Image (cartoon, rainbow, N blue to C red; front, side):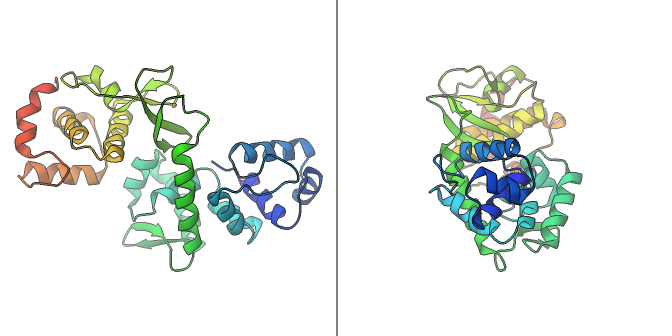
Amino acid sequence: MFSQRELESLYYLSRGCTDVGSLAEAMNISNPETYRIVRNLKSKDVLKKEKPLAISNCAFAKRLFYIMSNGPEVSRFFSDSRLDVLKCIMTAKDLSTISKETGISESHIHKILNIHTNGGIVRNINGYYSLNDNRYPQIRKFLESLIDHLEVNDAKLPDNSLLLFRKNDAIIYSTKEKTTDNVTGFTALEKYGLTGWVFDDVYCTTEYGELSLEEIFNDALKIAEHEDSTRLRMAAELFYMKNEDKLNPPKEFVDIHNRILSGERIERWPSLQDLNDRLWTVEG
């Protein structure tokens, strides 16, 4: 979401560089490049629209500004996909789960987490990574306020649509009618055999190109979790039962799936009897 240069500029802003000229000089970059950085930060609601350059009134921007005032080198923890990883590990997760939830390769995540753990902002306990709240509690507060802001603000979101969650630079949203964006989740699963279901909403993504079945299914799992819907979880469970050999969902889902098959009743999830009664609704 933020480039390293964009984050570095906030440090120099905290040191009194409140116009393009002084900011460019402090960062040792050209005025045109500085204009681009400022324009990007304004579009992301980090800076106020008017002059002189100043942090916006958004809570996430003020918290980010406070963090970045510690030095330009702090930018290495929050730039680009490194921020996505931090948001993902607000609850402890292992490498495989982080990769599935962010769409980033495990090898790249490993490099990112090495930077985070060496910097002390992330803990690794028995292979599970989480924020180091004891040392840097302000990071969680920043991430929480950023997530709150992003839940309702995005230029890519069509009118009369609801933003559900983000995946890298893309957003997944629900709407009542199809848009020009790709369908995903339960809407896209219809062509793969989820034919016995009618959904109130159309689920779309701003991702470009053709989505794989695994990407579509993982989006469906996140949609069901966001909506906290037993019905959507049932549809996902049934589709997985018919297509288990084609999918590799997160471990948390597989664990719950196996518990259901063993006969355990789990709140907000379908029972084994529910699944057996409705298995006919999925082709395959």
